[in-house]
Amino acid sequence: MWTVALYYGVLLITVTVALLRGGPPERWAAYTALIASVSTTVLAPNPEWTDIEINIFVVDIAVLASFWSISLKTKRFWPYWITGWQLIAIFGHIQKMMFSEILAGPYALLSMYISYPILFVILYASGSVRRRGEVGA
Image (cartoon, rainbow, N blue to C red):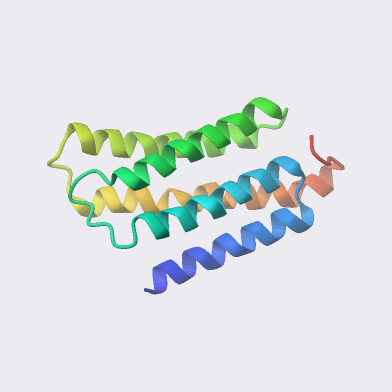
């Protein structure tokens, strides 16, 4: 599916930029996104989205914990943005648990496309580390 290829392309660009230009927090966030994406692909290769996707929900909770840890260990503001976006993904799962009448399409879109703003923030943060003269701040 071309959407999966596009996503993994953006993910690989983000990880590459984080490795080449980012500090430790940016690399940590990029590795988190990479591990979560691969885990989701392995644990839920063909999600139906008609009920809560438990495997994806568990991965999303682990990602939230990782992003939150980054937020607590740095003085920069961008980790709060990715933590907030990830929290929106968690709330999507919780809403599906509470309201089974939520259609599969909107649930899937929220779960999948919330990753793009997170990746773009990590990409921006990675590019801005060298401009600010920060390494690992």
